[in-house]
Amino acid sequence: MKLLSKHTIMTSQINMPNTIPQEISNAYFRSHHISFQPIQGGLTNKSYLVTDSNTKQYLLQQLHQLFNPVTIEDFLVISLYLTKKGWKIQKQIPTIDGQYYQFDHQGKIWRLATYIKADEYLETKWSEITYIKIGALLADLHVDLGELTYIPRYQIPHFHDTRYYVQRLILLKAKLPTTALQNFANQLLTTYDLLPPFPKIKKQLIHGDPRTNNILFRNTKPFTYIDFDTIMHGSRWIDIGDLLRSISGDISQTSLQFSLRNIRAITQGYYNNSKVSKTYDSFTKTAIIAMQHIAIELSIRFITDIVDDSYFAWDNKRFNSRAHNNQVRAETQWEIYQESLRV
Image (cartoon, rainbow, N blue to C red; front, side):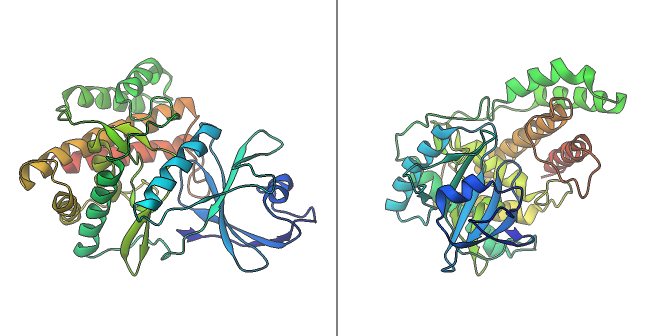
């Protein structure tokens, strides 16, 4: 993860950064000197690296409005289980009063967790071996999650429910601001109708958002996953397709970086550690179909959010509006889909 500017404060003072409410700092920390350092990369939650007067570090997050306390309760179950399985997983830290979350004066939910030290996340060209290990890590996660029968009590409404997003776009496409965007919407809807279906596979717990910026690395070796708010009961192919889609664009999902070598490395790593298909070739073929589904789904979601304006954060330093940012993201997902047809 890339760290931005640093703000050092005392919890007993009122000169805190306006993004960190005083009551949140008071809920977790007594009279320490605390520094807050924004962490870039997520499209939903706002994250901060916190360092206390003893140089101990934590991860403080303001959850997106979609989430609620049950999200945190689900993670407590998942994290305990994965820790017992040998995974290095963040642990939720209670407030001074013993609660695992805290509301601020605006009703927004905050939480504190342990901070796992790892390499700074950089958009760089990893080796083929690294991509193989990324695929293997997801396979290992799926194997372990597949042994847990817990059903999350909370899930983002309609998360990865592509048919729902299709219906939303059908309803909203006439409100898109330009004819070109409306034509693009029609193209996405037609393409979705022509996609081959996912193969049937037993549903299990999956991560839900297995992009590489939700993976921690040490010496370029991936070793664990973070951000389990999206965990859900669903098909492994959702995670596999999303991972392949994510590496085919940059971290902001605003420019194409498609690589057949990287895709084949990830599918090889996954197949080696979890053979969900009889042959590697059949697995790769299905993985590409899964990637196409997720790319089209996200393109539909991004273009719909131009009208809805309700989900994704946006980069106001690079784009003049959330709508512009979402349009570029939607177009990038479409480019990923088109490149995948050449595999």
